[in-house]
Image (cartoon, rainbow, N blue to C red; front, side):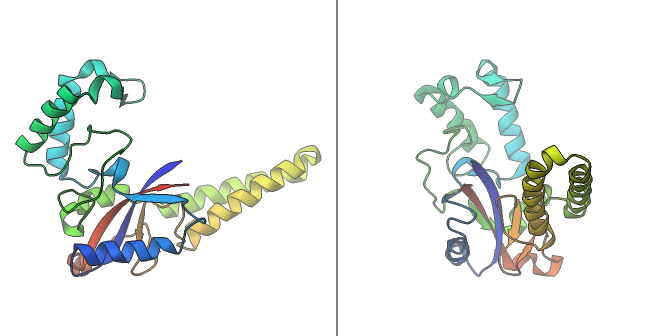
Length: 219
């Protein structure tokens, strides 16, 4: 499976931010991910929100027959053609956006990280997007705990399902510990590798010290 995660790191410049994140991710090989790529399927997630919204609305209107309304996705064979790619890229650049547009490759194939993109940018430039990605951990803790109690009660009432329910409870307990312990995991949305805190935005006075790095992990 693929998962997009925004990793925050304190750094003086782009290269340092990227190095920090790569060193951090190396600690989790074969634990959280089996391979990862910078940006990849999420290579424009941190682009300016207003311009990205205008661009996406234009594409959906211009190429409406390529979109599948049931799940909001699109058919690559209809949209990712040489002719359409050129037309879409021209609109992307017309709006002042940099790098390769979001519809060039829905699976992120052939999109190498470069300075001319939105994979690694100052946190200040994408703070509103990052805030939207942050999970509500207090709510998750409450929900996970409630589910574990329900499973435990069912175990006591249903001996036939006890073995299966124990396995489910063990899985839920692991997920619960990840949330409570601020662990980096495949459930993370935003993780501050500098402080070791998950799903938190740095204090306002520290935001300008941070960079945001968009990572596509596979697990």
